[in-house]
Image 1 (cartoon, rainbow, N blue to C red):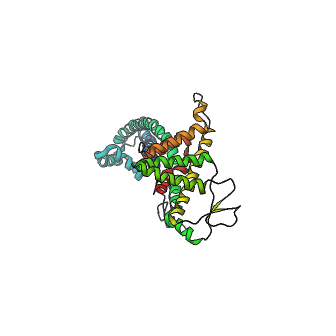
Image 2 (image 1 turned 90 degrees about the horizontal axis):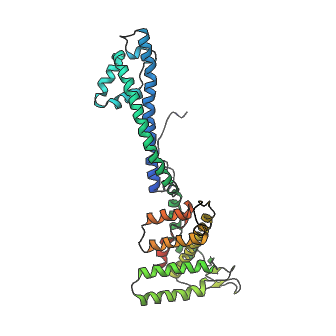
Image 3 (image 1 turned 180 degrees about the vertical axis):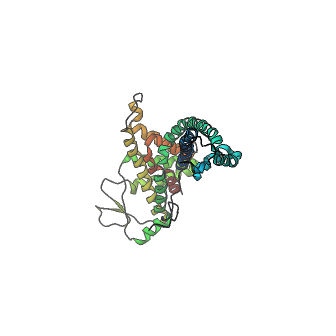
Length: 339
């Protein structure tokens, strides 16, 4: 039973492995360095603790000619030999043979060198640990982005052109909920307008496109609470309906998703505002309104290419916390809307 071991990668049985984030890669690298340092230090300490009583027994009994392997506790394991080879470098093989054949002469030298190496590596680990702790704290929130990577993949798949068209073609009646929150609708429109300004240099064309967009949105996509949007009329009191092309249908879906992202940003800002504040932190700076504004400002800076994607996500994480991965795709949705 269990006599055969098969090593496979962690993602072997999944359909598609989520790519590790930069924070994950760096964190795993630090953990591997910490483990390697601990193993090296422990192997040196273990060999020293093993050889000290052997040498003490030889000195007390006067066993000056016996080989190490014939003494109680003197049999060296492969890991013990590896330590000697590592510590003595190029002279390792020759010195290892001396330890085995003439322990009474070689053991005092080995034990002394192992003590020195043990102290040296303890100091090294202590200094490294301070730097590692600082880096681990910095990477902690970013490490949680593994959820964001998978979330983004699933969301892009869900909102892909293929998926949207398949949904539209498979149903004759499609109900799309639309928010009636004017604040959320206004912010989504402001983002699109700013993106349009960055995308098009021709002011007349920008004005014309946005004007037509506003007419469409104000007519069809700002509804009273409780009234859903649909692609087919059933009852005048229950639904607002119109027939549309594939492109217009996809635009409506992208606008719907964009408003949901803006709304999610508002909710995340609310959750972040309820976190414990530092004593020196002004309450007004950590209010839901202030955090939401800072989040939207970061988005505008990303759209204007004043921030790289990695910088945007890092700063947004500081404002909204680790769950901000839910709104990472906002800029992607904006590009889809403009297209």
